Image (cartoon, rainbow, N blue to C red; front, top):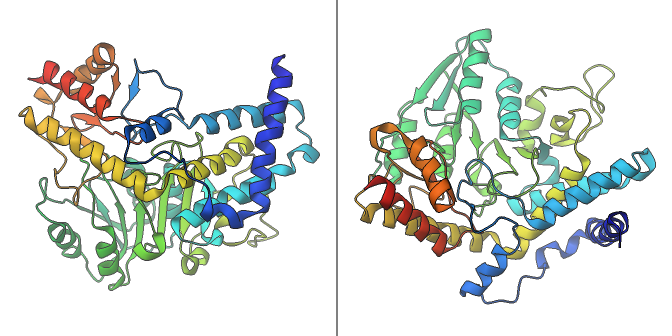
Length: 418
């Protein structure tokens, strides 16, 4: 069988599955789950088999980049080839329904409406849509967590320099002891001039997890708009954005969601959509300042997109539905707690709080002399563990990792840091 024939057969089967699902979304909530007992190692071995990486190069840097599910990568490859074979409007017409289906599945998982979801390119783009789209005046104040990602910090600085509003950075305790301490740190900085609070659910710099719901409620009591960077939680935590109450939320599919590259999420609460200007104007707008794109889709007007990637986001969503968000959250918590306990037993200093109420999947230990890069490189070359030098030595396990992977990382840290 030649490669063209095999790809066509895959396209027929996967395309039928995708289009069939798009035509019948009512079955999503009842999607079948793997029959293996999730309490057994066999269940997680089944999950591990959904990814193509080798045991000689274990990814443990989900805060930066995850491998995609095999099904996602195969769908991207096959649908890209399909477009290259026939890029006519006629052939590409099917992607309208596939994009709609991806948006539906993502909205359903987050307990929001499709109207409130824009599928953009990544968290950085989503953050910039918000900080460029909100109307702010000279003298208004924007509060930022000093542990935000640069696209949720420096991007605000750049705009403030242009338009003259004030930036105030909030520093939380390096070693918080409880959630109330974190809440009080932000609330104490609210002033009558505060218009926006832009924060990160889980910091990629420390691993601290903010009590987002309580901080949002306190900010809303002062009529402060709240934007949340969710890059370190989408696909990892069980999220109900309606319950959490934020005005907008951003995330990327290439991290914990284990989806296609260059596909991201922007959620904007329905009541806020009309108050935010889009950054990019492409087909779907005009004449004048009117758009035919409903709801948050006005933020998707970005010119030619990767149709295969947007369609494959729906495949990633179905993989997450099969596993279950609560099960995913529990697994990541168990793995990260095992990792932090092992690091602590070595006598190494944890930057990330041990308490799972104050942290999640991002685990950072301080590096000797502040040089984490050498240790991270040796972890990879000598132990096959891919980490990051962010904040020290950062390890971020997720559902494709096993307790054995965690133990291998701990052995490596012992040899390299003690």
